[in-house]
Length: 206
Image 1 (cartoon, rainbow, N blue to C red):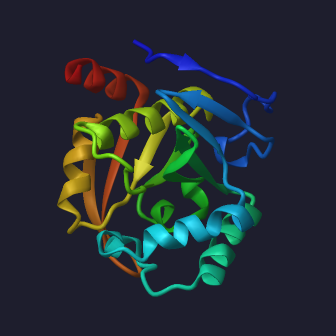
Image 2: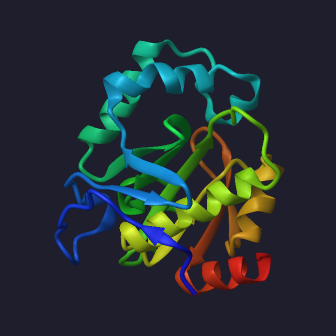
């Protein structure tokens, strides 16, 4: 099963290249959100405003300046193996996605990285108007983006083991938890979701 997808401005990409290494400009409209590559100078103030909030504690940037946030995301864009994406709804920024090749990150030190694996981090911005089920809808949209637009085979996440809210959401979207591992800055819960498990999970969720 595929969710409704209407893509625009999707450039040709090198088929077969790891998703995180496909550097051509890509934007898509999915689930009512417009997703585009992060424009660091333009978007850093928005991200900074999100990250200083108390609910962003697990993001570990609450005391960072706008310049520090900008430098961090520019380093991601310059890395050659990771990218960041900003989604908007009705013209307003809605959520941030970071994608990366686990072979080049700390996650890859703790499991056998497979071709097509794609690491992901998500930060949901404050909704202008609270909507029931909003975060689940965001999660479905981003997972569809990763599988259908970035051609991922399997999504890898490593949230803080204490972040019980994200664990519940991950499991609802089809993630299977493997183990807790000691990262340099946290104890991470390593979990994986392939395409079949995601679509089976959201079919049950509908």
